[in-house]
Length: 331
Length: 280
Image (cartoon, rainbow over all chains, first blue to last red; front, side, top):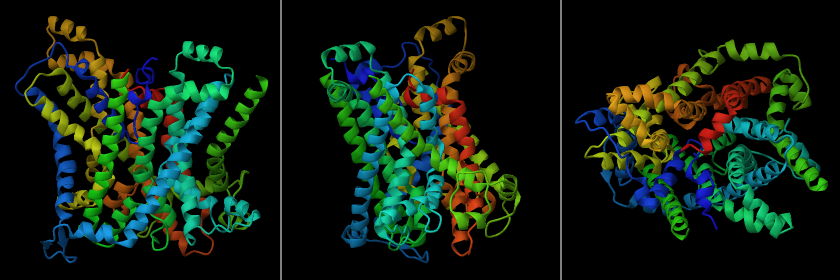
């Protein structure tokens, strides 16, 4: 069996909604490959030019990445006076407070459920559409275009449109659900709000998954498909036993991207849909960081939450790294 | 065979309907009058008030302080999108050039310094970032809006991969012809990277234009609001009113999605290329 990683473009390239996950994957993927990643045979050498070229990027990274990141870690150990009269070192208190708080754990639970559902539905719908679009010949390009452009819509804009469709007076989805005896009350009912947030978040993410699955499918050589078609007549079984394993690297790459999307990029959707009335509404962990830091002025608590989120992202990245490494080795 | 294809098309058409219909409905509804929408709900037909609504949205001074128009917000979004995309390309091309084409002692160290940024998205460090911006007095400035978003290695990564795929022979040949680092960069590497730059430009423009959280934190002065950032304000204004201006909200949503959507549709090929096979 040829290496899936080599066949498919997605895990080797591609980007998160902003592209940030892409790099980590490529970075570690590349590292695992070892010496073939070696530098150019010929290089310039100059005592100052490389530093000059790196300077702008480094300056920005130091000021806007390392400085705030270190400050987040530092202030997570301090209790800030709300009126700005200094701060006291409190050790792990901020962390224990956060982790003991029932509210925080409730939000964490919701975030987990939300992330799972958004990831599952966005991935499966994206895959279904990609498989179908890959199968049809007529209208292939048209379908592709019509299915991907929603990618360009910003999450809060998607949230606004979603609000209208779930509006109490004019929303067609509310009306539709009404026929089945379900009285949707977004903003008032916890479950209904969560439902609408998930629907909008999935809708927004489908095009991204579609693009990657489609390009993954089109990267599978015709010879492999033909061989599979001869060996196995059932299209459904062929998909499960041949196509899907070949798509696994793409799927895994997308899994991480989608988890990151659901954790972080859905902020806009949530912010528009709960409209500052977070009290009885479902929110995610990132939204909680924002609420505590900017509305509640709880600098220490918010920083501790930031650090917890950093750890989650770290674990995700390492998970991703391990997986890629293993694939490369076993191939 | 025929049956399968038929069902394939049915599924695809349902998919297209789900993806496209909400936006079409949003656009059609935006051409109706607010009272009409309030009475009859969302609409799939042309309402005939396109010009009035969009003119109002673009030119009427709105917001809480009443000093910003839709057009201003559009300009701000444009500045953010273009500034971010250009900044990203310039910074990351230079950095990638240094990393790939130069031999220097701290290369590996700087490589890791830059690529660590991929591990932590802006969302997890919003509060300290905001504090830093406050210290530097950069809130409510375009610099504060654009520059901190540039603090990530994505672009650098794309260009690093790309430069590595450029044949070594080119540099050897250029050096034999007497080209120095600047000449090689401008006369060989930049022209070679054109497609790559276009693809990254599209992705980054869309990303910059669609920013929400960071502009929300950085701009309290409505003069700096972008369209996407203004969305929530619109919703907040409505909460109190009897007949919300659904039409204007939809019109703003359409305007906010128009430029990125157009770019993705028009440059679809480059966009997909940039997204999925950035190392070719």
